[in-house]
Length: 376
Image: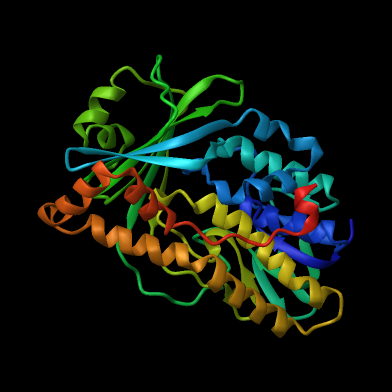
């Protein structure tokens, strides 16, 4: 196995796999390192928004297209807040894909693209620059460039020291719905958090429900407690049975993105964690990883300095992806205002699906100009 690469990507989730596949298909020698092992359960809403589906199809390649073929289509979202039910069309439709399957399919696609992919390999340090030295328990690897896609909490300590905001608890499980399989994304809001519910196909082809929640720790500490926080959700979930022990993550801190730290590009949650209720987290990871690799092309092809590629990525990220973070922050603040002040806006959304759709659309990241091969 070679120990010298053009690009080393740390973290094998959607952001890291996207970066690795994009660079490898351009001809770069790519090493992808993952400290865990796939497949695995992950706290995630499992909503893949329309904006990223063409890119995901290209990333998966011919060998992994079955993932999209079995994905469920989501054409409506329902927001349940303050005793109201706001119906929001999703047009074009989004897809529901279990992270257990998505991460593994992208990992396999990376290997098919020629990426050297190593699981259960923890990165201990990143040293130097061009070449960077990436230190692991298995030894050191050299790379001309490094992309950090290690998630929200990394032992690499590359991100700037940002002040902590509210610390949230994330919880998730899949359930047998016993006939409860409405093809919509339902967001149940309550004081101190919310829970999203949507149908998803299990690895064995069975039809399941994914329940994923974000709550203040003092509000609930288990998913069972979360389901009891909203009266409609409590009644709906009484017949559900879990398919695996709920998984949790803490703390979840919402913040604006940091695309570059020093001389390393950040992608996925390592760049920034967006509020899950906007449903753009997977799309931001896929598109951010792709943007990072594309902006490295000139440097890896010796037509630009690394600094220029870093500046190009940061500029592209802030122009294309950052608006989703700003919009979600505004919607989060709206959710926190007193109920009486929310009433007029909610009443207008309830009577006008077009207004509700507009409020959702402003949270979407801007379209990326796809390269010609994405359409093949």
